[in-house]
Image (cartoon, rainbow, N blue to C red; front, top):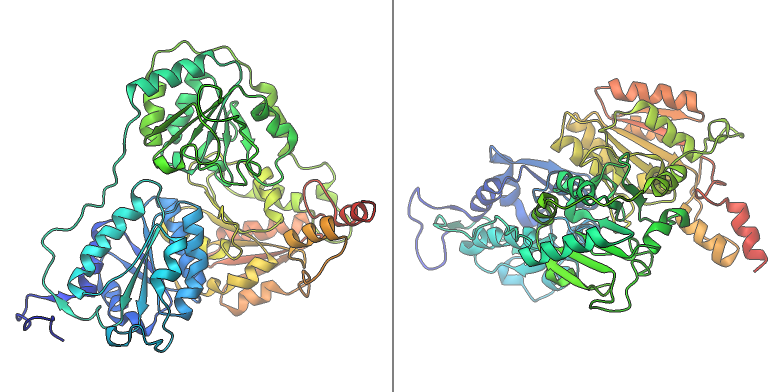
Length: 567
């Protein structure tokens, strides 16, 4: 195939797909996750042949997207996912939406129908640019093979600049294989890291010193600034909250840690934030969950009457949810470092009781380990994990009510140990664990998932087996879509469509995919299974039978149904 406009000079031009693979490798990308499709044959081949990138074939595009998102979240380097037109692109979309809501840099290649068929509703044709525009930072369709490498470099730059996020590049299937001249110069991919201005720094420092009850709310933007965040908190003696599913950005065992602003956050944990006279928000967009349905932190409006200041690398996020008296568009790491370096007098404040308030909510009830009925209390599962797993285990967790026990009971002491979707997408944990073990093969990786989530993407255990990745999957099997069952019981007084048949033999399911499997109905069986999993050379699924009556840390299913009866 020759390049439009002239013959192919012998031995000089390469395929557009080969040029793309070189651009990706130069940016530090090491994996491309995909379900192979006919619309990007040459791209799959170019990645497979490249010495610096590994092509990872998954069992479903949803799993491929979750893997790419998890790797990028863990490493900070944008990962790549690829899918074919129509159905493949639709399947990939859930993971791409997760990357958007989680501010995770990712580049997605979408194979499209060939150029001569575009716009005719050809086989599996969808307007992919329009489809992906609402869930990406940028979506585009490439129309010339000789511009594909350039667009790839631009996609990497957009994905990592400002608030990170996913970028979708749709490519007609006939372009990847066209031979193109080498690209002499491509757009740079190193994102800018603006510093905190001196005036902003000095005003914030004075504010933090003179406030009576200041707190920091730290989000995903501080993931690369953990040491600076700790230093800043200690310099000004300020308590720190972590935003929704960003618990690993600050050591939870630090005396200044105040808790996790997640779903169902206890009032005792929220009290210090409610009473704060200064709230510094760093690297958080103050999502619906973090802000407790946009209730906290409170601010009457922008200007000097607001108790809120915000530092974010993306100016569009500053003041988007609540009024701020000062907003600074700056890199979190550089901003916190400059604040911590100031020689201020550390104020004398005591956050001991606030820290203990969080600790009390993170403690299992005394009777959890002896729960009757041959089913385990979810708290006891988390306690067993705490006893058996290393402190620096990478925990990937799915959506579901079981996660409320994990969020409270697991103590995140080390950086980059939590991979969890703020989008609340089901099916995340198992694919994320595969990516985490690929990206960090020397780390212990454990997926925590409900039976609903594992039945969506548990087939990616086959991917883990094929790639020889010894990871652990812990399934909280309670036979329910627990979150929805809880809402139905509380709001309607009855349930509909939330049962999952069972108990299912999920250990046999895992063995059928080539992994190891075990079933646990009590703490002793679970402890034995965890010991076996940690020494195994294959992935292992532990099917833990949990009590569906224990629907949340605060409520039972029966209590919710009865409360609804008396409203």
